[in-house]
Length: 374
Image (cartoon, rainbow, N blue to C red; front, side, top):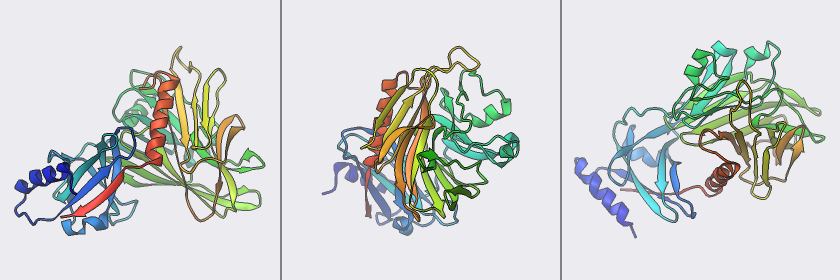
């Protein structure tokens, strides 16, 4: 039986069409959890939209257009259509996809190679920013394949203007880079484990943007081969960040690797922080001690890692909190990692734990999508 929302949406759309037989695709998004899901990304395979032609828009139950994005993953052909849905706990919401020219939506994500800063690759959404280090910096002798976090209180895109100003280690009312990566995994990067120690690669060798907004950024990093025991392993990371999210989705590929243990690590700091781990549900999280670099109070950075399939162990290794699992060659290892800030929406460790719990629910119980062609 069709929901009342579905009938209302059809009624709202029909007057705007030239013919009642004009095709549309109705997408019902169901939330099976007891948690409201706000502005959460859903995707519709592009082949489901073939009858609509090459350009489409998404409308909500009021008939208003909402932002969407064609996902191509670096190719020429569309793979899916992405939009963000809001659904109350235990309810469904219906959206319509129709032929049309999409509006010019302001982008809520951005990522790029930063050659003017020694080949950083930096990326952000309105909540948080990150960077990793590239080949020009490695040539100077500064080596790290960890993830750096830039904490933000301003809900906009700030990375380009921070680089242009060149003074992002101090908070001027928008946030700052007070997170030290060094030769660590930083805020949730992954490494092979050998004899209970990390095997760290160097800075990325190449970068490539696959999708760049307005709702999702996806990019690919490759790393030069490095030895893991007797094997010469080549690493490839594909990282995605959606609008409104704190955590990145990370796909790790290790070519030339045997079956091996891998670990995503969160570097630990001196002082009293708060550690939280839930091996069965695949979660490790950390609330850092107060940061006082260049200031008396830079707040607390919080970091989390989620393995959707659970962890085999979580323990401290090489001054990291590490989540551990097995890697099977030939397939990506998919996990989620990212950060938040006590001055950017998470005032207490409990606030951060609540956010991580919500992210765990989203990861383990994605919104269910049903497609009906009219």
